[in-house]
Image (cartoon, rainbow, N blue to C red; front, side, top):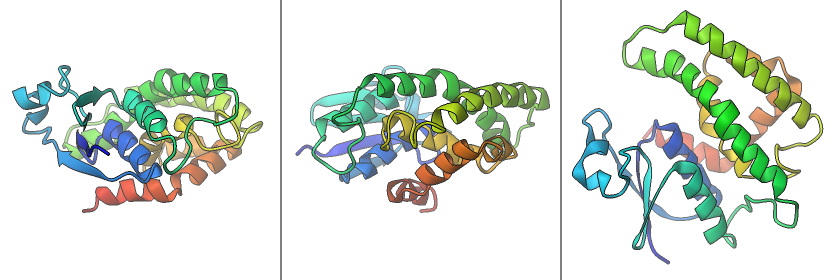
Length: 213
């Protein structure tokens, strides 16, 4: 089996999404750190892997993959016989496709703005914009109301087992739960239980541990 090389950064939510998938699948991989501050992701070498200059990029033999959700889908299908089944085997695929899109287009854009304001700006020594935080907290609350209704009917988003639809939320959840935005999750019992459940997975613990090395 070809060695998987992941070019990324341990603090990057997109990279963390791919790491989570690899650990869920019990796959060995080589991590190649990319120094974003030094602009390494815009270097000619990296652009040969991802012409958009964004992390992560993955090499599998002669294949070069980018876009984190496409990478996780590839891993889930290419290594279907390994580790955790992440695609609702034996169940209708429509809910999986729907909730993967919900994460990408409803949850992540709002979560990313909050993470930028509440996590990355303080990390880089710049000032948080309270108006942006307030606006996006309100938007996230509306999204989570829909999640609460869904999770009242199903233990996980797509079906009764953990899938890519749940896993893709983990990087955003990881950062948001360390901010005052946590209250939006805690106030919704089904969302809170779901977030705690998926965040406690052993594979995710390995992703978090990468940030401490």
